[in-house]
Length: 127
Image 1: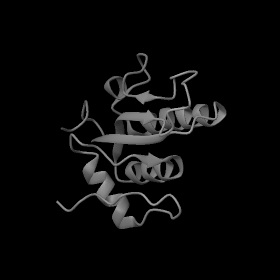
Image 2: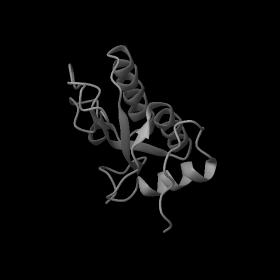
Image 3: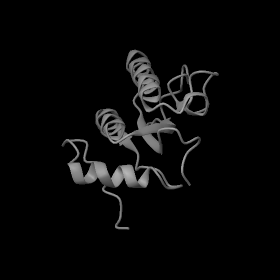
Image 4: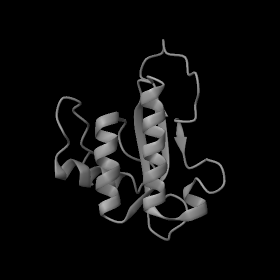
C-alpha cells in the first residue's frame, strides 16, 4: 500500500486522500494525525461508506497546553452505551465523535485526531 496521504491543514482533503485514510484506519497504524476540520470531513466520509469509529485518540501538538478535561480525548474507551463495543453502530459512533468535537471546541483545546475504523456490526478495531 502506498504511503498514507498526509493532511494539508490549508486545504480540504481530496477524495483519494480520504479513501487512503479509510484504508489506513483499518490497520494497526490508524490514520495520520488529522486537524479538527479534516477529522470532521473524514468521519463523515467513513460513515457514508458504512464504517464506524472504533477508536479515536486526540492529542495536543502544543506541549504548553495542559489538559483541563480529557472527556474529548479518546473515543472507544467510554462509559457503557457510549462506545463502539456496546453498539457497533456507525451512526452512534459518529454522534459520539461529534459530541467530543463540540466539547473540545468549547474547551478551546487545540487537538489533532487519529482514527481506527470498523464496519457496522463488527466489534473492535481492525488490526
